Length: 238
Image 1 (spheres, rainbow, N blue to C red):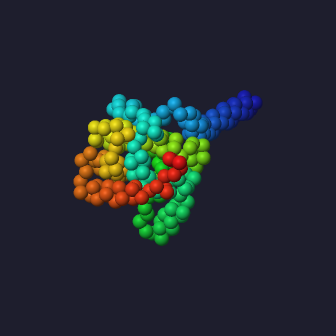
Image 2: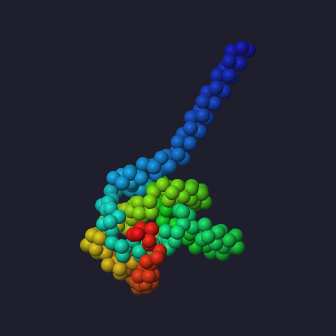
Image 3: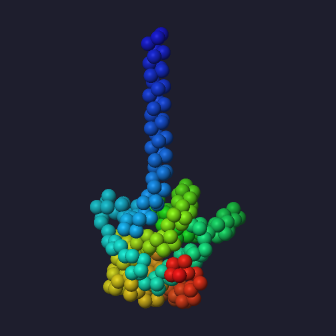
Protein backbone atom coordinates (compact mmCIF):
# COMPACT_ATOMS: atom_id res chain seq x y z
CA UNK A 1 0.00 0.00 0.00
CA UNK A 2 2.81 2.41 0.85
CA UNK A 3 4.48 1.68 -2.52
CA UNK A 4 1.23 2.32 -4.39
CA UNK A 5 0.66 5.54 -2.47
CA UNK A 6 4.21 6.64 -3.25
CA UNK A 7 3.76 5.87 -6.95
CA UNK A 8 0.54 7.88 -7.04
CA UNK A 9 2.24 10.78 -5.28
CA UNK A 10 5.17 10.64 -7.67
CA UNK A 11 2.82 10.54 -10.65
CA UNK A 12 0.91 13.59 -9.43
CA UNK A 13 4.16 15.44 -8.85
CA UNK A 14 5.33 14.70 -12.41
CA UNK A 15 1.96 15.80 -13.78
CA UNK A 16 2.15 19.08 -11.90
CA UNK A 17 5.67 19.69 -13.23
CA UNK A 18 4.50 18.98 -16.78
CA UNK A 19 1.58 21.39 -16.46
CA UNK A 20 3.89 24.02 -14.99
CA UNK A 21 6.24 23.70 -17.98
CA UNK A 22 3.31 23.97 -20.40
CA UNK A 23 1.98 27.09 -18.68
CA UNK A 24 5.44 28.69 -18.62
CA UNK A 25 5.93 27.88 -22.31
CA UNK A 26 2.56 29.46 -23.17
CA UNK A 27 3.38 32.56 -21.13
CA UNK A 28 6.75 32.87 -22.90
CA UNK A 29 5.02 32.49 -26.28
CA UNK A 30 2.54 35.25 -25.44
CA UNK A 31 5.22 37.54 -23.99
CA UNK A 32 7.75 37.16 -26.83
CA UNK A 33 6.08 39.63 -29.25
CA UNK A 34 6.05 42.33 -26.55
CA UNK A 35 9.76 41.77 -25.90
CA UNK A 36 10.41 42.03 -29.64
CA UNK A 37 8.43 45.28 -29.83
CA UNK A 38 10.89 46.75 -27.32
CA UNK A 39 13.83 45.37 -29.31
CA UNK A 40 12.48 46.86 -32.55
CA UNK A 41 12.67 50.38 -31.13
CA UNK A 42 16.39 50.17 -31.95
CA UNK A 43 16.70 51.82 -35.35
CA UNK A 44 19.35 49.52 -36.82
CA UNK A 45 17.25 46.40 -36.10
CA UNK A 46 15.42 45.29 -39.26
CA UNK A 47 12.46 43.05 -38.38
CA UNK A 48 11.24 40.23 -40.60
CA UNK A 49 7.64 39.10 -40.92
CA UNK A 50 6.15 35.68 -40.26
CA UNK A 51 5.59 35.33 -44.03
CA UNK A 52 9.29 35.92 -44.68
CA UNK A 53 10.15 33.28 -42.11
CA UNK A 54 7.67 30.91 -43.80
CA UNK A 55 9.35 31.48 -47.16
CA UNK A 56 12.74 30.75 -45.61
CA UNK A 57 11.50 27.54 -43.96
CA UNK A 58 9.97 26.40 -47.27
CA UNK A 59 13.25 27.26 -49.07
CA UNK A 60 11.49 29.72 -51.37
CA UNK A 61 13.62 32.73 -50.51
CA UNK A 62 12.40 36.29 -50.84
CA UNK A 63 13.45 39.75 -51.96
CA UNK A 64 13.51 42.48 -49.30
CA UNK A 65 15.79 45.53 -49.35
CA UNK A 66 15.39 47.63 -46.22
CA UNK A 67 15.19 51.41 -46.68
CA UNK A 68 15.04 54.12 -44.05
CA UNK A 69 11.87 56.17 -43.80
CA UNK A 70 13.63 59.21 -45.29
CA UNK A 71 14.45 57.16 -48.41
CA UNK A 72 10.78 56.41 -49.17
CA UNK A 73 8.85 58.77 -51.45
CA UNK A 74 6.26 60.85 -49.53
CA UNK A 75 3.94 60.01 -52.44
CA UNK A 76 3.97 56.38 -51.31
CA UNK A 77 3.47 57.21 -47.64
CA UNK A 78 0.49 59.45 -48.44
CA UNK A 79 -1.07 56.88 -50.77
CA UNK A 80 -0.73 54.02 -48.29
CA UNK A 81 -2.22 56.08 -45.48
CA UNK A 82 -5.19 57.18 -47.58
CA UNK A 83 -5.75 53.63 -48.79
CA UNK A 84 -5.09 51.65 -45.62
CA UNK A 85 -5.55 53.90 -42.56
CA UNK A 86 -6.60 57.52 -43.01
CA UNK A 87 -6.68 58.07 -39.22
CA UNK A 88 -3.14 56.74 -38.68
CA UNK A 89 -1.90 59.94 -37.04
CA UNK A 90 -4.99 60.31 -34.84
CA UNK A 91 -5.58 56.91 -33.26
CA UNK A 92 -3.43 54.97 -30.79
CA UNK A 93 -3.07 51.70 -32.65
CA UNK A 94 -6.76 50.78 -32.97
CA UNK A 95 -9.49 52.93 -34.52
CA UNK A 96 -12.12 52.20 -31.86
CA UNK A 97 -14.86 54.14 -33.65
CA UNK A 98 -14.39 52.08 -36.80
CA UNK A 99 -14.14 48.91 -34.73
CA UNK A 100 -17.45 49.62 -32.99
CA UNK A 101 -19.12 50.22 -36.38
CA UNK A 102 -17.86 46.87 -37.66
CA UNK A 103 -19.08 45.05 -34.54
CA UNK A 104 -22.51 46.69 -34.92
CA UNK A 105 -22.69 45.58 -38.56
CA UNK A 106 -21.72 42.03 -37.61
CA UNK A 107 -24.34 41.87 -34.87
CA UNK A 108 -26.95 43.14 -37.33
CA UNK A 109 -26.04 40.37 -39.75
CA UNK A 110 -24.59 42.77 -42.32
CA UNK A 111 -21.45 42.20 -44.34
CA UNK A 112 -18.58 43.78 -42.45
CA UNK A 113 -15.80 45.92 -43.85
CA UNK A 114 -12.18 45.81 -42.80
CA UNK A 115 -11.22 47.81 -39.71
CA UNK A 116 -7.52 47.00 -39.49
CA UNK A 117 -5.21 49.94 -38.89
CA UNK A 118 -1.60 50.10 -40.03
CA UNK A 119 -0.39 49.23 -36.47
CA UNK A 120 -2.75 46.23 -36.46
CA UNK A 121 -1.49 45.07 -39.85
CA UNK A 122 2.10 45.56 -38.71
CA UNK A 123 1.48 43.47 -35.59
CA UNK A 124 -0.17 40.76 -37.69
CA UNK A 125 2.67 40.70 -40.23
CA UNK A 126 5.38 40.60 -37.58
CA UNK A 127 3.96 38.19 -35.02
CA UNK A 128 0.77 36.45 -36.18
CA UNK A 129 -0.75 34.82 -39.25
CA UNK A 130 -2.95 35.64 -42.25
CA UNK A 131 -6.62 34.76 -42.59
CA UNK A 132 -9.78 35.74 -40.77
CA UNK A 133 -9.71 34.61 -37.17
CA UNK A 134 -11.34 35.96 -34.02
CA UNK A 135 -8.39 34.66 -31.95
CA UNK A 136 -5.90 36.45 -34.18
CA UNK A 137 -7.85 39.71 -33.93
CA UNK A 138 -7.95 39.45 -30.13
CA UNK A 139 -4.17 38.98 -30.06
CA UNK A 140 -3.58 41.64 -32.71
CA UNK A 141 -5.26 44.60 -30.99
CA UNK A 142 -3.16 44.78 -27.78
CA UNK A 143 0.00 44.26 -29.83
CA UNK A 144 -1.02 47.18 -32.06
CA UNK A 145 -1.72 49.43 -29.06
CA UNK A 146 1.63 48.60 -27.44
CA UNK A 147 3.55 49.04 -30.72
CA UNK A 148 1.88 52.41 -31.33
CA UNK A 149 2.76 53.49 -27.77
CA UNK A 150 6.37 52.28 -27.81
CA UNK A 151 7.39 53.19 -31.37
CA UNK A 152 7.21 56.61 -32.95
CA UNK A 153 4.69 56.94 -35.79
CA UNK A 154 7.59 57.28 -38.19
CA UNK A 155 9.25 54.07 -36.95
CA UNK A 156 5.92 52.24 -37.15
CA UNK A 157 5.37 53.32 -40.76
CA UNK A 158 8.99 52.49 -41.63
CA UNK A 159 8.61 48.93 -40.32
CA UNK A 160 5.24 48.45 -42.02
CA UNK A 161 6.48 49.59 -45.42
CA UNK A 162 9.56 47.36 -45.13
CA UNK A 163 7.67 44.16 -44.31
CA UNK A 164 4.47 44.53 -46.37
CA UNK A 165 4.09 41.99 -49.18
CA UNK A 166 3.74 43.36 -52.72
CA UNK A 167 3.78 40.08 -54.64
CA UNK A 168 5.06 36.51 -54.30
CA UNK A 169 8.35 36.80 -52.43
CA UNK A 170 8.39 40.61 -52.81
CA UNK A 171 8.59 42.27 -49.39
CA UNK A 172 9.09 45.91 -48.55
CA UNK A 173 8.65 49.01 -50.64
CA UNK A 174 12.16 49.10 -52.11
CA UNK A 175 11.87 45.59 -53.57
CA UNK A 176 8.33 46.41 -54.74
CA UNK A 177 9.36 49.64 -56.50
CA UNK A 178 12.26 47.89 -58.21
CA UNK A 179 10.16 44.87 -59.17
CA UNK A 180 7.13 46.72 -60.54
CA UNK A 181 8.66 49.95 -61.89
CA UNK A 182 12.45 49.50 -62.00
CA UNK A 183 13.04 52.56 -59.82
CA UNK A 184 13.98 53.08 -56.15
CA UNK A 185 11.29 53.74 -53.58
CA UNK A 186 12.50 57.34 -53.24
CA UNK A 187 11.47 58.14 -56.83
CA UNK A 188 7.93 56.75 -56.93
CA UNK A 189 5.45 59.09 -58.64
CA UNK A 190 1.95 59.77 -57.32
CA UNK A 191 0.39 57.32 -59.78
CA UNK A 192 2.94 54.57 -59.09
CA UNK A 193 2.51 55.07 -55.34
CA UNK A 194 -1.27 54.86 -55.65
CA UNK A 195 -1.05 51.65 -57.69
CA UNK A 196 1.20 50.06 -55.07
CA UNK A 197 -1.09 51.20 -52.25
CA UNK A 198 -4.28 49.75 -53.76
CA UNK A 199 -2.54 46.46 -54.53
CA UNK A 200 -1.71 45.85 -50.85
CA UNK A 201 -4.97 44.08 -49.87
CA UNK A 202 -4.33 41.32 -52.43
CA UNK A 203 -0.87 41.59 -54.03
CA UNK A 204 -1.15 38.14 -55.61
CA UNK A 205 -4.09 39.21 -57.77
CA UNK A 206 -3.49 42.97 -57.95
CA UNK A 207 -0.36 43.67 -59.97
CA UNK A 208 0.76 47.28 -59.54
CA UNK A 209 3.13 47.03 -62.49
CA UNK A 210 0.47 45.66 -64.83
CA UNK A 211 -2.86 47.05 -63.55
CA UNK A 212 -6.26 46.31 -65.02
CA UNK A 213 -9.01 48.89 -65.43
CA UNK A 214 -10.42 48.26 -61.94
CA UNK A 215 -7.05 48.77 -60.27
CA UNK A 216 -6.47 51.92 -62.31
CA UNK A 217 -9.79 53.36 -61.11
CA UNK A 218 -8.94 52.61 -57.48
CA UNK A 219 -5.50 54.16 -57.95
CA UNK A 220 -6.98 57.38 -59.36
CA UNK A 221 -9.27 57.64 -56.32
CA UNK A 222 -6.39 57.14 -53.87
CA UNK A 223 -4.21 59.53 -55.84
CA UNK A 224 -6.84 62.27 -55.42
CA UNK A 225 -7.16 61.56 -51.69
CA UNK A 226 -3.37 61.54 -51.25
CA UNK A 227 -3.05 64.93 -52.94
CA UNK A 228 -5.29 66.37 -50.18
CA UNK A 229 -3.74 64.48 -47.26
CA UNK A 230 -1.56 67.23 -45.79
CA UNK A 231 -3.41 67.43 -42.46
CA UNK A 232 -3.47 63.64 -42.09
CA UNK A 233 0.30 63.05 -42.31
CA UNK A 234 1.62 65.69 -39.92
CA UNK A 235 2.76 63.11 -37.37
CA UNK A 236 5.23 61.78 -39.96
CA UNK A 237 6.68 64.95 -41.45
CA UNK A 238 6.28 67.79 -38.93
